[in-house]
Length: 314
Length: 301
Image 1 (cartoon, rainbow over the protein chains, first blue to last red):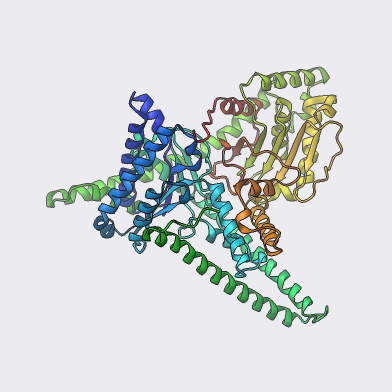
Image 2 (cartoon, chains in turn purple, cyan; image 1 turned 180 degrees about the vertical axis):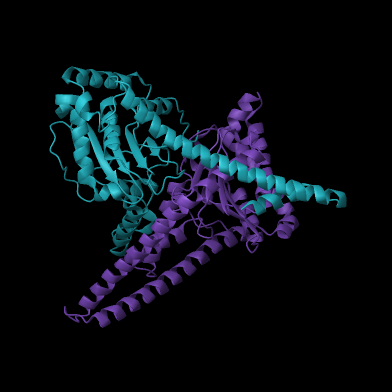
């Protein structure tokens, strides 16, 4: 069974056209379908769900549609805050991923409240990608790493796949096992590009507001059929990553030895000790950096909550 | 595996004393149905994969290949290589096929997600891409096999180019790009197509390398962390011989994943899957292009 499923909930507008109703109704039905799908996932013990609710590209849409979507978000996040007891009972942790500074301030504050209120829940996790694109997320992760270098917390050579993983908005989640896109389109549209490299991709032609439990089962079946092959590929990649890191550490340790002028004919024992020391120091640096990064992120939400305007977007 | 499904089904039903036994029986039935579905799907996938290869082999062995369906089967090679006239016919027809489509991808990625690899079939695909007018073709597998054997692949592509397109192959010259150095392996008169061989090192590892470079600039105070934006990172990843993002990825094999293929670059890439690349025909290749031509990209709007 997949532990983490991601959804691209595509097809609301086509659904609305099909039924000859307003676009806004399509989006509202889409939201209801999301709530229903989350219940099915919970019943199937899929503990983590990530959804693509609003892309940065969607700001290009007509003003009234964007305003309608923002209003929908306002209503739904407010509703969430009203149902805090229920969220606590089910242990639901809500995370919102994206460049939140692009959103209206009142929505940012609602989001901050919802995130802080459910921060310590740990039975199931809902990640809502709002004002998100994967390229922005990856760029932001690189920026955070650069910030770490600016602060003197890490060196450029400390930047690795692992470090960038931890700098993404999704740093607290495992990679999705399964990505489902509805409405028949067969592309990723800038969603979790980094995180889904070894995920099972399922493209289904049904429109999102028409999604059924059986569609979900069909997707899970496909995941199960692919599981072995994907696990093998993932493990190979993980092994390669470990070797790459070891090799990088070895190079850096060797450089340091040379610099400290201990000369060319270096004793293998000394080299090994230098490598171990370097690795330990690097891990220490990375750990301090990640702690500082987490504090910076927490401060963003607590400041919003206190009513201060968040630091201006870079 | 079926346990959560059973539990999920159970929670959805109201449990009464009488219903308890019904519930147990239903759970067993559901598990049985789930396992049957699995078995059927496994069977279907295996048959599809066999069928694909057997059918293709049967067609080439029994029938004389037509101009369109020409297959470079090893046994047929000596007897059925088209003559000069037929080759130029192929070329013209393939070129007009390309022009007949509403839109043609600028860059196609060939993602081989299979254990078995056949260089001749891959070379055919590359040559067809060039013949219909695709400017950039990349070839990828997630174990870096093609990267390690890139000269063998290049030789096969040049050979197939000669066999399928004939003497005018200079017009369809190919520039091979190896990742780290930008020197073309083959001098060309006029570059009609660029072929690149990729591996997972071009994916996440490439992004990490770009990140390290940027961090070095920041350390040297040539840049600030806040200077970085999507466009800057994009141009760093594209490099000096920048290939455009793949518009279309043709994935071969039964694994439903991109397996690490250029994560940054595939944000808007259409992904069309085939059960196998072994004995792939031009007809199937072209049907994917027709499918691509029919796709509508709204780009968020």
